[in-house]
Image 1 (spheres, rainbow, N blue to C red):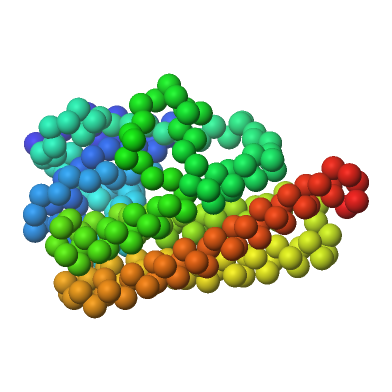
Image 2 (image 1 turned 90 degrees about the vertical axis):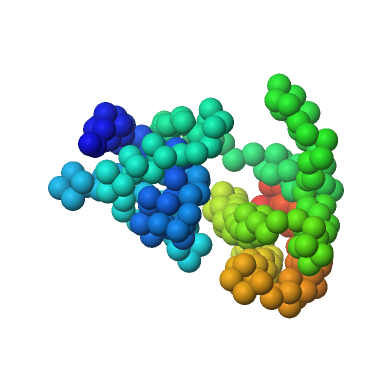
Length: 268
């Protein structure tokens, strides 16, 4: 019998402009890779519903390991959350998120420059959040590439389990960096020559994003075929990714510092 209390709770939350984040067993979720194959507890987001078809609108990884939208019936969703095998307390939680559209953030160019320098120098700035516990094993900034390289080497030597997530994260970081450059262009009152300069950096950074995506795709192919040649190809590409990004971040910092100085002195 369908336990409508969970369904009604989520419908009410969505009607109040919340999104739902929880853990579900993907064995019961059509369109996911584990569907009716094996139990696999994983996070899922619900952002809408269709009361006529009795389906939730969700976003998650599909059977091609692509992050995409798909529908899940109310009944299938409840089976998925009631059959979660993970015993940790967070797995039983239903979290609600709502954007605060009234909040405004002021663009702080000095902060952007500081953060880029921290990234370039692999600085550990966790002391800024000292209220939270930190792990001494954490790696920061550009230094991540060295650990990323070692991880692929360990995969080749069968010393670690395969995990697609680091490859997604590296690629998504490059996508976000491109969006940040575009955002900066929109926030700064740039001259024609300055606009040309940052567009050159932006175009070059697109190549960085492409290399990161190539590495990610090769990892997906490795997961499907178990062919070491894909891993071996990644090693050179990870080095290439690092070597391409470092001078671009340096150029971006130099550009922002120079532009900031000119704006303060009234040259622009």
